[in-house]
Length: 109
Image (cartoon, rainbow, N blue to C red):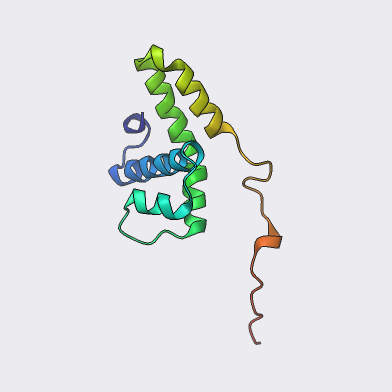
């Protein structure tokens, strides 16, 4: 599915990694350290970056499920459960949460 939608090999790899992060978090329930270790991207991944990857990986993961469903009709029940987990989001997902921001010291004039 990714090959059809994304021409750049590096972009495809990023989308695949994001989808994998999504599956590891929402389906397997792994924490950020476990996901970072499993992805083996060769550079540190901060929690903010990982969160963005998990959010952005939802759509490619869902497209992968559609492809799997087309290839394997017997997996319908499993696919339905995984799809439900991926589509479920917190009510405040994607919205700014100022209370979680660290106060930044004011710069001198």
